[in-house]
Image (cartoon, rainbow over all chains, first blue to last red; front, side, top):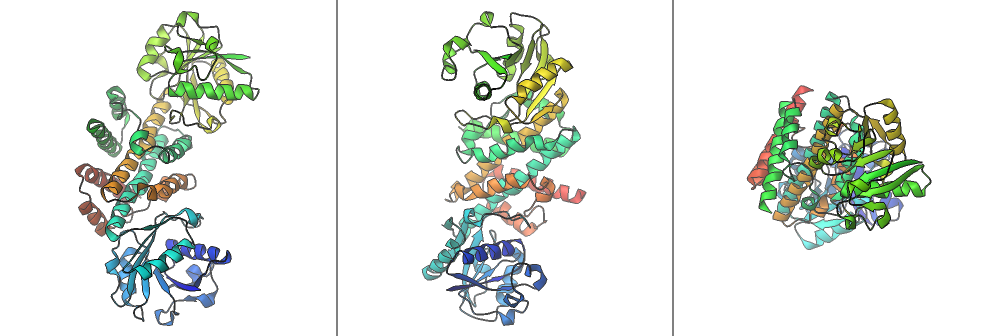
Length: 257
Length: 257
């Protein structure tokens, strides 16, 4: 049995706990032996109280410690671990491996997904990006990751940074465009839900076509009459600024081809 | 039987033809009697040659003529129809109803979706936005639309304009963000496919939460250290400009709450 301990109790920690419990129930040779949480109450709906500790000094022995806390807490908590030369990883997309304390062997176990409280996700479809300092540790991370996901990638810190920035564009910024769409609908008394199938299809389309092949719309076809009409229609200065910036970017792309 | 004729042979026309044929096969009381296409070959894989004409003067009599051509061709083709006082609609999100020629009764039959050649869509889930000049014509449009879709909305020209602009944000601009994500991945030798589950989840999330509730990321939590690191990481001036514009917009939104 490979023993795993999770340090943290936020969104990522909770989804990881659930994923390991699932795989354990299905017979995986990975055992989630303990969870560290400052407030034991925040994970007590997921585990027996006997498996939860709020004292780092009572951490059990394990093959892998997964620090799933906010980015700025990773360094401090890794330096407070009361043991040496064990494998300690964090789950962040934007924090380099080297931020972890030198007392232990370092690694990264980064599930690339947006986790929502109380919304279950199928962990087996979530890509997990792994990094370690040596091959033996990588093998262990690979084994643990494969127990909960079918999509494992070896990704170094520089590549992970690129992925994280790309994720900001396709997730955070895309969601913000959804919000602007909703604001425009609200202003004109149109139900935003009418756009739901379009949003779904836009996301599904790039599983078949490259984004460049999938691009449509007035900017793509240099339909300046429609662009001008849209710009005149947008009463919100901020919406207009974003419309112009993205339209120009699509048009510049077209010139490059 | 309600008789329908489609004028046009592009993406929207072809998907409409397939949808009406499907519903006809399932016993709907709507009959697609004819299609007008300048090049009869472009729809000959969908219908019998006897149902296709390339001569407006040979258009059959029907209860509804659906003009599914590019935006700038709608006005001209509606003025060339060799009959009067019949119901003629267009399928565009951005063209006002009044652009149609005064010789016939006007309406709009706007399926709000992005159509890809050779990619089937489930038409029953596609919202169709209807507009007409009088209640009797609306009833006919409603009957025809219901034969191919479960989501029918009465939307006037002003609301349709808002929907179309909102659609540019959630579809065209979102797809462009996907492309930037892909460019960042390519530059750093990371497979873009790693982001697919994130893209899917981002789109699915707003079916449950409002975009404002679903917003996450460094801009949302005012994580300036990460924002600065991302800005330093982006070597492409255009990517950087879009990163800054959208980050600022998310941060301004946060202040308003």
